[in-house]
Amino acid sequence: MIHMRIVIPVALCATLLAQPKEWLDPDTGHRVVRLTDEPGSASLYFNQNGYTPDGKKLVYTTPDGISIFNLETHAVKPVVEGRVRIVEVGHKTGNIFYTKESSVFVITIDTGATREIAKLPERGSVVTVNADETLLAGTYTEAQGPSGNAYASPVRSAQSEQSHPLDQPPNKGQMMEERLAARIPMGMFVMNTQTGEVKTIHRSTDWLNHLLFSPTDPTLLMFCHEGPWHKVNRIWTIRTDGSQLTKVHTRTMSMEIFGHEFWSADGKTIWYDLQTPRGEDFWLAAYQVDTGERARYHLQRNEWSIHFNVTRDGKLICGDGGDPGQVAHAPDGQWIYLFRPERGPQQPGLITPGVLHSEKLVNMAKHQYKLEPNVTFTPDGNWVIFRSNIQGPTYVFAVEVGK
Figure 1 (cartoon, one colour):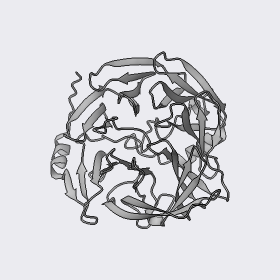
Figure 2 (cartoon, one colour):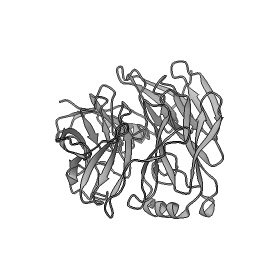
Figure 3 (cartoon, helix red, strand yellow):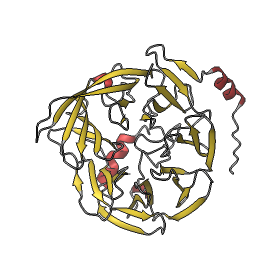
């Protein structure tokens, strides 16, 4: 068993004692609970699976490693110690896949048994595990970038010099432009979780990023062409043997942007943020991978969110809002939102229209959006989990969907 000793400064202890762990948001009437006590703790990126298959446990990160929060008892259990980067929680077993230094590991959370899967390829990383946990997927660069920088993913792997490792870097826009223009040769690969065998399935000089396996189809992988959203054809899928490379969305107007894509729980739908054009008209778009059918749900400017997520039954949607400095320039967008989708009439061959009806869950006026909240629903759909600095350091919070 792993035993960790977390040392918290006296001044910070006093601050923690003065901060409530549970309260009713006076502006929304919804109950908010701080789940974690470790300063610097955070829930996972919005499209990473952070829940065990039974829906009872939430996996989160701390400055000292990886821990588990029991959603029923609120008990906390540290499981991985040290400077590590989590990949995902397995959809099948609930085992945690993570990287440490230059290797990939998997740990069984009940027993603590840990196994090294393989060494990472040079200048490579893995970021997702497939539905039956037989394959990991990642990318590698075939050459160094300017100043020896291999340009790791700015969202899921970079440890930059911002105040918190998960904060967005202040020069991100410039970095994105430079990385796109560099046209560095890259490879996309899959790694066998039993043997460690690596197979390259796609090569490109486009910037390959944000790989995410379907939660139900072990051979289907989504990825993006990274870069300034108005310059790239972002969302793609590919099979694990390298076949069926498919572009999910095609731009139809100048400055149209789309991204922050994620899977529905049943693996049938790819959801993504769509703006026609950038910063002017806002939609949450849905693409059915088996039929190619499409739907678009309209939002108001203040309702636009950096990230969205959907309950497992598809009936509710959440969003994490944004401050005036984000792409929507919303004057009153700093909220955790709940949305109820209303779908319009469907006609074959046409995009189905829809609208999202919003309800505010949490006032995020005190949140500094350099840290993106990254909302997810708990598996039962009763709570929205998010990371926030509304109490100073970063912690994991939950807001109840019902009142």
